[in-house]
Image (cartoon, rainbow, N blue to C red; front, side, top):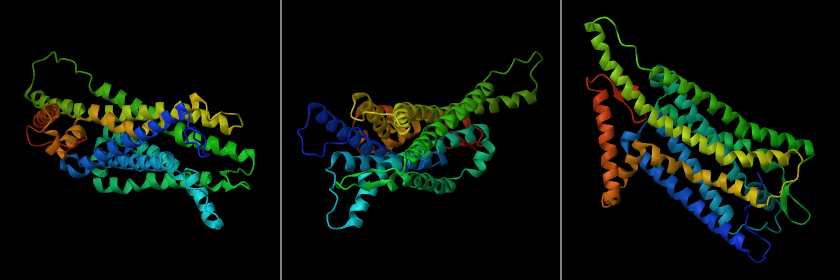
Length: 363
């Protein structure tokens, strides 16, 4: 996927806009590496964050962390020149590195993992019994391998078409215009349309299901029987379970929306270009769309911090030697712990139901 924010490599003087872009590159890379690194550290270190969902969240942060490192190496550090005297090495550098293959491959991996998180919420809410029995942490770890493999395989054609011209320049060389058209359509469908359809369908089903379950029952007209009294604690447990689950659900919906908003404009422009139309990749509008795509690498940790209370508390606890010296963070961590403790105590008051950190219950 071509980019409009590549630093100039021809030795010309930097313009003011190019300097601003370089600063933006550094900020994006730093936020992506730091934010995702903190999330991974907390999820690995804190025991009460162990769950199927959080295994996928860890994988999402790992992919975004690697993408941030690749972005820093490609856009901030000087790019290597094509080696002279070795056709094999020159071709490898061209196809693998100068094509930006790793960066775009891991962007596909990030999308696939996000779809997995979306389906995770679907089964947790729509098929809770199946979810409790089948969606184990071990299977979650195995599932984490899939996004990496799909991403690396998906971008092989993009790497393959890159060739070295007679002027010793690395650029895509399509066999014919039809091949580029097909590739552009396939990328748009796989990387945007399919995830969009899955996310819209899943979250629509989930919202309808939650609205139906949270609808208050009609008041009985006859005196309450002992059997009916026994059902009240279950309703109370179900209410708190839905509150815990909705916290994770809300976070995943916002993460999905941020992906669709950040990637949408650039995906449409790229499809337009691959269909044979002219696009000025150095224009301001295209540059902004690319920056939006890159911002998606560090947005997720920010979303977790504001919406995912369990993870936020885990981050504060994992850095307790630092956070407890800051009154505001110490107070925030204490409030999150009290909220989680009240919810768990209320739900498991009879000792029969326990809830994991992602809001799913274990009987």
